[in-house]
Length: 263
Image 1 (cartoon, rainbow, N blue to C red):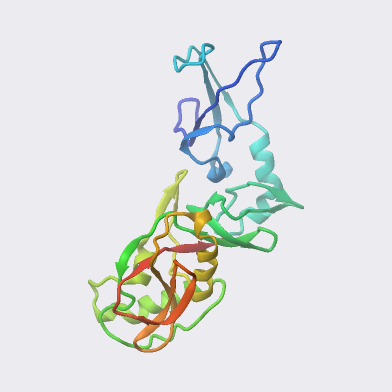
Image 2: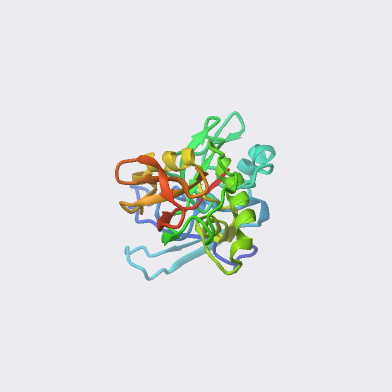
C-alpha cells in the first residue's frame, strides 16, 4: 500500500505449472495466505501495488521479481459498489460478491474482524462473531444484584442491551469486570482496520451463533452468557452442548463470553 516499497497488506504463495507455452495464470486470493486477508483490503485508501516473486525451480529462492501498480479491477469493484459500501460501518471493504450493485456476504466468511454467522437482506447485512472466546468464566453482574431493564431480544438488540448493562452497572464497582464489559472492551485489528464495536449477543443472537458454532469454531462445551436479562438475579444463557437456553443463569455465576458485531 502507498508505493512500490510500501506496507504489505496481503501476502500469499502459490505453486503452479506452466503450460506448453511457458505461461501460467493465477487468481489472486486463492493461494496459501501468509499475512492479512484479501477480503478486508480497503481499496479507498490506495494506491496499491502488486509485487510478484518467482522461483522457477519451485523453491523459495525468488530470482524473478516485479512490482506494478493496480490500476483497474479492484477500484472498479469499489466504484461500482461505493454508494452501498461507504454508508455502512464496514465502508468499502469485503467486496466478496455483488448482485445488482449490492455487497453480499455469506456464513463462514472471514470478514469484519471475525466470522460471519448470520446474514439477511440477501447477504447485505448480518452478524459477525469474534474468532475466540474472550472469557471462560466471567460473572454477568458487577457485584450487585439489580434489574437493569435490558430485556431486549432479536437481531441487533444485543448492542442496545450491552450499552444499558454497562451504563447501569459501572457505578457498582468502577474497577470491576463483567460479561457485557468484556465484549465492549474487545477490539481486533485485521488488514490495518481496527474493529471495536463488539457487544454481548441477545438471547436470539446467541442461539443463532450456537447454530453455526462449528462454522465459527473455538467454542467450549459450556454455558455462554447472553445480554437478555430475566430479573434481578438471573439472565438468559445457553448451553453450547445441546443448544438449550435457560433463564436460571445466576448473574454471579461464571459463564463463557463470545463477542459479536453487526454489519
